Each structure stands twice: as structure tokens, then as C-alpha cells.
Image (cartoon, rainbow, N blue to C red; front, side, top):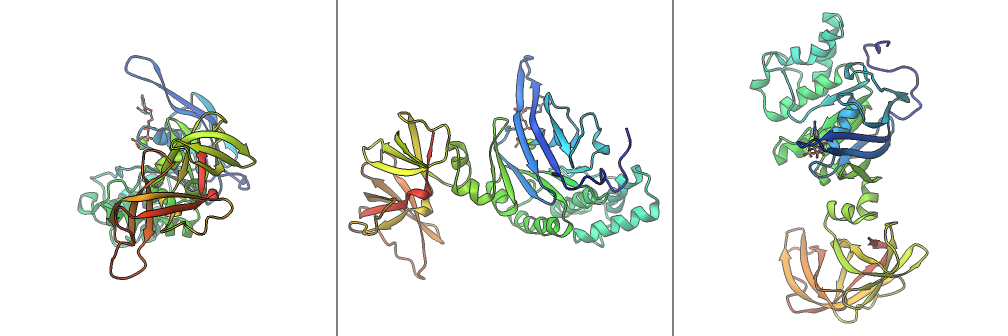
Amino acid sequence: MKPVPSDGRLGANVSTAAVEVRNLVKEFEDGAGRPVRAVDDVSLTIGEGEFFAMLGPSGCGKTTTLRLIAGFEDPTGGEVLLRGRPVHGVPPFHRPVNTVFQDYALFPHMTVLQNVTFGLRMARVAPAEARRRALEALEMVHLPDAGDRRPGQLSGGMKQRVALARALVNRPAVLLLDEPLGALDLKLRKAMQDELKQLQQRVGITFVYVTHDQEEALTMADRIAVMSAGRALQIGTPDAVYERPSSRFVADFIGETNFLEGTLEARHGDRGVVRLAGGATVEAALRDPGALVGHPVAVAVRPEKIGLAVGDGGSAGGGTVALAGEVVDVQYIGTDTRYRVQLRGAGAAPVVVRVQNRQAGYDAMWTRGTEVVASWSGDHASVLA
Ligand SMILES: Nc1ncnc2c1ncn2[C@@H]1O[C@H](COP(=O)(O)OP(=O)(O)OP(=O)(O)O)[C@@H](O)[C@H]1O
Ligand SMILES: [Mg+2]
């Protein structure tokens, strides 16, 4: 096998996707020797320069997918292509990718500069050239003067930046980041999110970014794969996965959602007619291929998509759902007020409604016990199995 050039590129085949994963499967054995599917038939295509997030709860297979792309694990089935080339059997250090781990994995006995030049020295880059490139990488992460310090003398955020510099220094085509900000406090995490995003746009490297923080994925990524139990349930832009979830898991995992339980009575094109548990009938967009007529479904609608009015609701026009009910709880949360409204005909659980507080000086618009009409557009609600 030919080693890749020291700049980490695989060659001229740049018109293809940066990363392609086809029907990837990885099985481990549990303690009793039974197979566990950590990755279960995942297919992804990640474009050059894309910021791609893998989002999902603990144990859903995010790290394993990254390790398969990096070459630290061999797949049980399926394949990985980097810039259009299958990389089966190619060891990690010959793949045009670099990984940033959650725990930084810096060498404590080396200085920052030695840490950053380490990979280049292994690749036999001349010392002067290695030093020049390392200083450039440290400049990139806003640590131009930290070269002589040791990791123990740095804050968590600084260590994270050194780890990034070390990963960027040999100019990989793809950077794999496994919960890189997980160890940082909230404020630093937010600051680093902005920095990372800017850095990614500036250097134009493809990022595959693993996180279990939905807000991080929504704010940073161009596209998100939402994972559960080894599968990529939905892949799309942040607004697509938030506004148009195609499964109950995705609607529930990202943001807050009301689920109105019922039965799918009929399908009309892209609309479903759902009879709710309390007897009311509402329309919503059909987004889940698993939702079948005659079977239990939920109508998912976000708290901020619901409007409240006193009286008959007035505006309930075509495609709009309007249900009367009673305010049962009011919570002031600064930017918004969060109402819980018991809707007649919907079912037992009250719906959550968020109303922005646009006036200075707070007075809840409605108090407990107020009769209101809740309304939302059928397009803003999804029928999910
Ligand atoms: N080497 C291994 N041997 C056996 N099982 C493993 C091994 N590595 C991972 N698993 C199992 O595979 C599944 C996926 O693990 P993985 O580390 O990919 O999850 P993750 O999404 O990264 O979770 P987290 O958010 O907690 O880091 C888990 O059930 C885990 O127990
Ligand atoms: Mg993990």
C-alpha cells in the first residue's frame, strides 16, 4: 500500500464526497458472548467542507461510527469511503482524517509545541518545517504564545485548543471530533462552539462532530444525523430535523414537543386525519412512513407553534386546528411564559404553550383557570407512529 502524502490528502479525487459510509455494521460481544450491534446499517454521505453532526443519546453508536471512519475499528459489514476511495484495511495513520478526543489525549510530559509537532515528526517532516506548521496551527486556535507550556499549566479550554491544533497541523481532509467540548463548563463551551465553527469555515475542513447536546448540533452543524440504537433515524438540516421530524424519537430528542395521542383515521395526500384520545379530530402533516391508518399515532406539535386566544379563537381558518381548553399552569421563564393548557377533546395530558414576553414589565396574559382557544397550523404538526 502506498502511504498518503504528508499533507494527508488521498489524491486528486476531490469531486466526490469527503466521507461516505455505506450500510455500515459493527457488532461487539457483550459479557456473555452475545453479539451487540453498536452500529446497525448506517449510510451517510458527507460533503467536502461540510460541518456534519452525529447526535444521539449515550450508547447509540456515535463513537463507534467515528472509530470506524478513523480506522480504529474494522466494520462487521458495509464500507467506508474517504474522498471516493474505499479504505478497508488502511490503518488510521494512512487515512486522511484526524480525531479529536473528548479527553484531549495530550502528552503531559511534552510542551504544547512538542505535542503539536508530534504527528509531523512521526511523518518525518523536517524539524524547521514542523515547527513552522505547528506555530501556524497554534495561531489558528488563538494560542500563539503557549508553545513552551506543558498541558498541566493550561485551562480545559486551552487544552482543547491544543488538541485541535495537533489535529489540524497535518491538514487532514476530515476532522473527526468526539464530544470535543464535553469537559468544559457551559460558558466556555458556548465560546468554543463559536470559535470552532469559525475555524471550520476559515480552514474549510470537513468536520464530523459527535455530540449528545442537541443545541450544540442545531447551532453548529450544516446537517445532523440523529442516531438511536445504532441507526441513523433522520439526516437533515437543523431546521428539517427540528421542524419536520419523521419519527417520534427525533421529535422527542430534539427540543420540546407535545404529543397528542390518537388514531390515524385517514390519509389525504400529505395530510393525516387523527382522532385524538379525547374525541376531537385534527389534521397534521404525514411525516412518518410508519404511521398507518387504523393504528395508534401521536400528533407532535412544538410549544412555540401554538397560539392562545380568549373567546372563539377567531382565526381558525383552513388547515388550522383550534381546540378550546383551560389554563392549568403558568410559568414565567424570562424570555417566554410557559402555559400548560388542558384541551377539551385532546386527551388527558395538558399541552405546553410558549408565548414570548414582548412587553417589559411582566403580567401573565392569562392566569390559571382562564378559558382559552389553542390553535396551530396543520403544517406545523406531524403525524408520528
Ligand atoms: N469494545 C466494545 N466492546 C463491546 N461493546 C462495545 C464496545 N464499544 C462499544 N460497545 C457498545 O456499543 C454501543 C455503542 O457504543 P458507543 O461508544 O459507540 O456509543 P456512543 O453513542 O458514543 O455513547 P456515549 O454518548 O456514551 O459516548 C454501546 O452499547 C456500547 O456498550
Ligand atoms: Mg461516545
